[in-house]
Length: 423
Image (cartoon, rainbow, N blue to C red):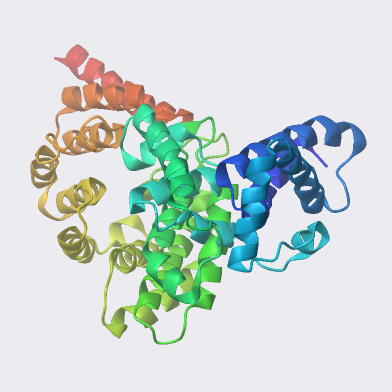
C-alpha cells in the first residue's frame, strides 16, 4: 500500500472508529483523544508491520484499550458510567460486535454530533472536525470567522455535550428528522472544502468531496418517499453531482486552476450530469423549494450549456435573485453579482459588490477581491483589477488559487506596459 493510500485509509476510517467509540462509551472528548492515539499507533506500526487484515477493527481495539485504561484510572467515574448505562437500559456491545456492525458509523456520527445541547452552528463545526477531518482553520474559513473564534466554539460544543447529561447516541427517527437541516449543512460544507480546498497545494481534496457525496446519497435513500424534507436532500445530492461532474476539467495537466468559462467540457462527467439533472427536475415541481435545490438548478443550467457562450445567464440571474431572497449568505450575493454582470454589464455587478463592503462575514475574504478584480477587468479598469487580483492572492491559503490570481495580475500588468509603450 502506497503512502497516499495509507493516508486515505486512515482518513476514511477515523470517523467510523470515532463513531463506534462514542456509541460505546458515550464520551466524545475522551473518544476523540483515544482515536488520535490509535491513529498515531497505526502511523507508527503499519508502515513496518503492514496494514492489518481488518484495519477498522484494529483501530477500534487499540482505541478501546486507551478508553478502558482511562476509565480504570478513575474508579468513581467508571462506577457512575456503569450505573448510568444500567439505568438507561443500554447494553454495551462487545468489541467484536462493534467492529462488525453494518451501520455506517460516519453517518451515525454526523447525526450524533448534531446534538440537542448545541446550537446549529456549533453542531456543524463539531461534525466538520470529527467526521470531515477538517482543521479548525478550514472550518473557520467555511464559517467566515477567525480561527480563534472557531477553536473556542468547538471546545464549548464538547463541554456543552458533557454538561447536558443527554446521552451521546444514535438519535431516533423523529430526532433525525429534526436534525436533518444541520446534517445537510455539514455535508454541504464538507463537499465544498473537498471540491475547492481552502488551504494547501491542491485545488481539491477528492476524499472529502466523495465522502460527502456518499453520505448524502445514504441520507437521500433513507428519506421516506414523498416527504417535503426529502426535496432538499435530493437538491443537495443533485448539486454535488452536477458540480463534481466538472472536476477533471478544473485543472490543467500541470495542476493550474482552469476557470469555468475556459474548461474543456468534453471532460465533464455526462453520467453524473444526467443523474443530477434528473434528480433536480423531479424535485423542483414538488412544491417546497429550498437553497440546495436552487443551487442545483443553477449548476444544471451551467452543465447543460454545450459551450460557455451558450450559458443561459438570464435564467441563472433569476435563480440567484430567488436564492438571495431566501438565503442570508454573502456568497450568494457574490455569485449574483457575477451573473448580473453577464446580463447587464460589469457596472451592475460592481454595484452589488459594494453592498458587501460592510458585511464582516466576507469583507476580508479573498473571493470578494477576486470577483471585484474580474468585474473591473470586464469594465476596462485593468489597473484596478491588478490591485484586487494581488490583494485576493494574498488572502487565500490555496496555492492553485493564489497562482491563478497572480497570473491574472501579471497578465494585466503586461498588457498595461505594452499599452504605455505604444503611447
